[in-house]
Image 1 (tube, rainbow, N blue to C red):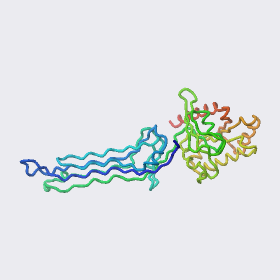
Image 2 (image 1 turned 90 degrees about the vertical axis):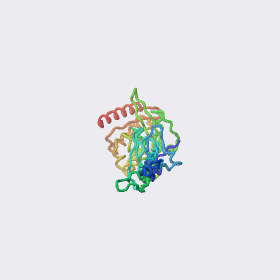
Image 3 (image 1 turned 135 degrees about the horizontal axis):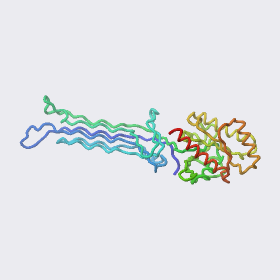
Image 4 (image 1 turned 120 degrees about the horizontal axis):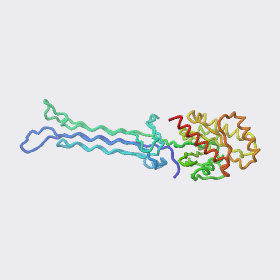
Length: 341
């Protein structure tokens, strides 16, 4: 199933049941008085995060969700049955917006977390509610109120510890395949990856993290060019970004630098939520160069951009440098958890 990360739906809370107009009628009791019962409350609509749901694809075909209406009240002071609440399952990591106001209603980041998105209507009152010493035979009732109606925009942001970014064909899919059980499509042409891939990287006993491989970014991605704009928002949830650079793309010395500048520009244009995240440089495809060539290009790139953070030289094909990279990622994530505990 292809990854779908945005959908628009309409939710309807159930209407409340109407109050009943009724009078007690029994033999030998000529004036039994009012006994009309209240209606039932309308059902509400909830969104529920489910671990087994991975995309928003189902909402392409079903876009309307309506909770059950409350039953009307009846005689003999019988209250109508309340409408059943409706639970709509969505993937963990779904953000919910009011499509008309762009207000963020909630963020479902934990399995089985629920969010009320459309409250059901209030029940109507039966005529028994209005009896008094001065009005012993009231004929007044109230109708149930209507349930909420909202048009919602659902946006799915991947919940991954580590996100891979870079221009097309730098080897992101090859890297996630080498270190996890993920099986993305790999080919020798740009934009092979059309939707995100998640993989669990196991480093040791009880030591693992989730890595996300996103489609490659090109110049102008933040303004909608290419595929990257659809998925840049997923990086905002990642705790660490691996900025991959292809050392062997061509023989020009400024290739690594130009790749870096392209991604750096798009991240800052997209917003601080992504641009300011911790980021490591990962120079890939060192197996296609001699040791001296790869070292020279890496050091020149580091010098030109003034890079101060961590960087790694790896080969996704030969697995050179991958064990060290994954172990350092685990140490970083463990330290990050302690700092935010």
